[in-house]
Amino acid sequence: MSAEGKHEDIDELSAQNLPSVISAAQELRSPLALIRQLSLSLEDGENTGEEQKLMLRQISLTSEKALRLTDDLTKSAKLKKGLFELEPINARQLCEDIVSELTPVFLAHERNVKLISPRKTSSLLVANRDLLKRILISLSDNALHYANKDSSVEIQIHTINKGKIVRLGVRDYGPALHKSTIKSLGKKITNSSPTMINARPRSSGLSLYIASQFADVINGEIGVTRHRNGSTFYIDLHASRQLSLI
Image 1 (cartoon, helix red, strand yellow):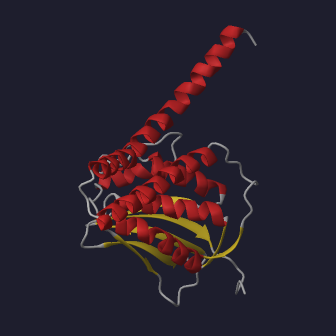
Image 2 (cartoon, helix red, strand yellow; image 1 turned 120 degrees about the vertical axis):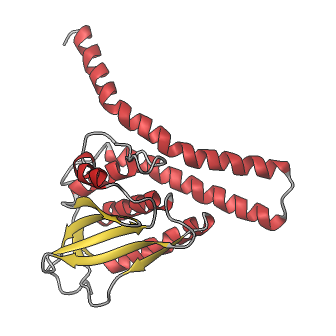
Image 3 (spheres, one colour; image 1 turned 90 degrees about the vertical axis):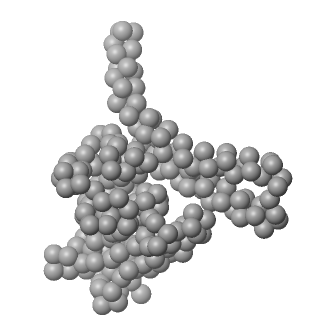
């Protein structure tokens, strides 16, 4: 291949990756700005010991969130079907672990997260545990931006299609998405690059883009349901035929 041809390939690859780079910058801007603000407040030295502890805790949690995003971006660039083992997973147990892990992050932002799962609902599904966890945390991080103080972000478990499909959803009570946005989002969510969600300007759509890539590898499908007061972003996965994981 000629030098000119190599340059053309590099230019084309750069153009393809540019939307993801821009979206990553947009997503990272918010946590970095918060960390900077908290750091400046600590430098002032006008806070009580308890206030300083809370600020340091919030810096730590916000840093973890930013690191999760960069880690997910790295993993999404290396995704290949067959490299991630699929196994039966107890969805309720996984979601309980996620709620426990995310609760400190939500509390640091004066928000709440909880699990909604009918006890009679079968929650055994087939997926890769690591990727599924990353999907749900990514969707929860996205919902955190739009949850208000009077409501909780809900991680929900349902079965559909006569129990053949387990749906894991993240319900927020933020700005309602317009019907036209919902209609087009299904196509945009699996595009080759992130898409800005107009009704939610603080989100570049990067978390949804990454989630859709992870979902494809574990034979899942990402979707969204519009509510009068918010939205539910979900992943549908095949139910496991095993009766018990024990």
